[in-house]
Amino acid sequence: MKSVVVRVTTGNRDVVHDITAECERFAAEAGEDGLLHVFVPHATAGVALIELGSGSDDDLLAALGDLLPADDRWRHAHGSRGHGRSHVMPAIVPPYATIPVVGGRLALGTWQSVALVDLNVDNPERQVRLSFLAG
Image 1 (spheres, one colour):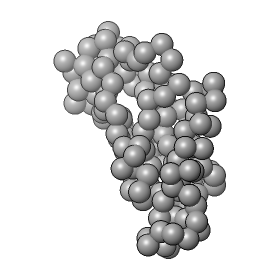
Image 2 (cartoon, rainbow, N blue to C red):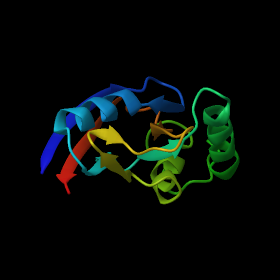
Image 3 (spheres, helix red, strand yellow):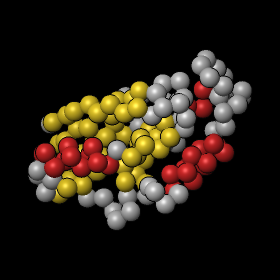
Image 4 (tube, rainbow, N blue to C red):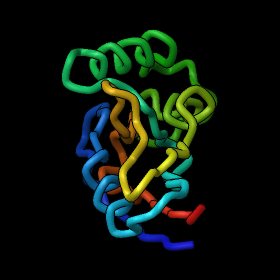
């Protein structure tokens, strides 16, 4: 198994951050068939396979905002207002995804991209572990 950690700055707002290019580079370096596992080792972030750039990323953030509002309802209440929602989000958007790789290329669908989803405005620096398991 090959593995690398990619660092991502998400800033101080809710974000859907495209990491497809990093995933593609890592898979190309492997150059063979296998599986790419994408994992964020954070209790407040997730990985989504989603169409980006057409409004779907904003729609995802709006849906998460409706489901998990940034208000004072959360028992987990340290950090910024509504921080507890960030700890619930990975149950909805899991902190991992596994993608087939064929000949060193991600076997994503036509409109699929790989994105880091982060609602935690208190932690702007993230890590994403990419692991390749050869077939």
